[in-house]
Amino acid sequence: MLANVVDTHDLLQVVWSAAAAGVGLIVAASLGIMGAARATAERRDGRAFAAGLYAALAVAAALVCTAGVVLGVSVMLSKG
Amino acid sequence: MDGDLLFGLVVVTALAFDFTNGFHDTANVVATSISTRALPPRVAVGFAAVLNFVGAFLSLAVAATVAGGIVDAAAITLPVVFAGLIGAIVWNLVTWYAGLPSSSSHALIGGVVGATLVAHGTGAVKGDGLLGKVIVPALVAPVLAFVVAGIGILIAYRIVGRLRPGPVARGYRTGQIVSGGLLALAHGTNDAQKTMGVIALAMVAHGNLPAADPHPPTWVVVSAASAIAAGTYSGGWRIIRTMGTRIIKMDPAQGFTAQGAGAAVILAASHVGFPLSTTHVISGGVMGAGAARRLSAVRWGVAGNIAIAWVLTIPAAGGTGAVVYGFARIFGHGAAGPLIVAVLLVAGLAWVAVRRLRETRPAEAPA
Image 1 (cartoon, chains in turn red, yellow):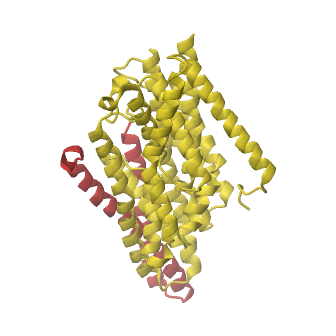
Image 2 (spheres, chains in turn orange, green; image 1 turned 90 degrees about the vertical axis):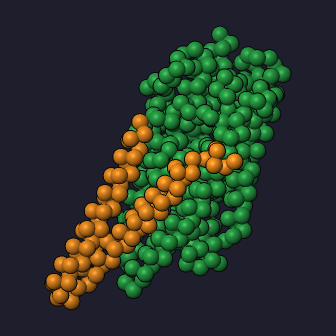
Image 3 (cartoon, helix red, strand yellow; image 1 turned 30 degrees about the horizontal axis):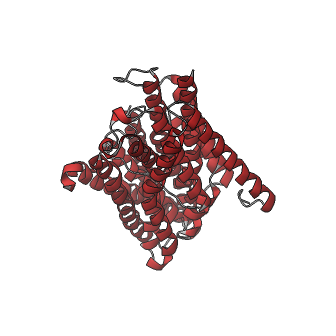
């Protein structure tokens, strides 16, 4: 009965894509925050190489988050 | 002349509904940002209002499908649309007064379904559509957001748990501004379109638009965008308090997680074309972000009241829509009945507003 009124394929697609996008965005943002915080701390302690690695992690995570936002806006635009 | 008056009443009522939709759903976008001090309250609602306005222009795809698949298209007459809108407005006002987040979209659908039942009987309402487009999504949305936010906050705490709290809080607050902006855009895109859809349906019923391709004209798009933005800016502070502080006391990581998970769930559902309520998603996200840390962190009594409001939305808005339609019909098929209802509603709201002004301290605006 339920399968007749709900497209289970769409429903499953919503579940996995929402889980992947949501958890992915939160992990990326958290890694970015961690990278930025650790980069500052390492630089303060004079460890330039480690600071650079953490800064690169922060930049990469920021790029992932930006890509997520762009993807979100494109989803809104593609409806019309 | 009578038809023109009725059409004008429906348009004004639709814009009034859009305004209530804005102030009712402001909380979805700004409550977590205000609660974690990512943004000052007035800046947060101003930011959300501007992005709701912009969002209304991003897409017109669902503008013509309000209650589509749920109510027989031939049953949608101007009096039915009017009664449905009044049912939704009344439910939005009642839940706002109680500080309970509930779905404005479900209220609108409920109002139209109730009026249709009285006008055309059960044959005009499609039970499968109601189940597939309203009830199942209402069950899926909060659970999905709850789980995504819950998993997300557990991983986030593992990543940032040993860092100094100051930079971490600043980072998540910045993230909240971005995720809140995305939510506001998505809300404007989805919800302003519902009002555009209602006005487009009224225009079809009035003969101003072809039924085959009822794309709303520019004035409809601009007025719907303006009404939802104005409603958002006016801020439904009671619901903001419930969402922001009464369900859980959240830190910036939880606020970002609730918003980020909410935005991801809403946009994933939009991409697939699966209709989820913003209110249900964000409420689920807030509860998930709190419960994953500690089950007792969630005030389950408040969560239960919210769930009751969700269950009651369709029957209550539907009952009001049905009563309004039946009452208006006493005065015939023309504009007289809806006009009397509109005057009574405005008079009732004015009476409540005057009473509140007389008896209360300013409890609305935040400090």
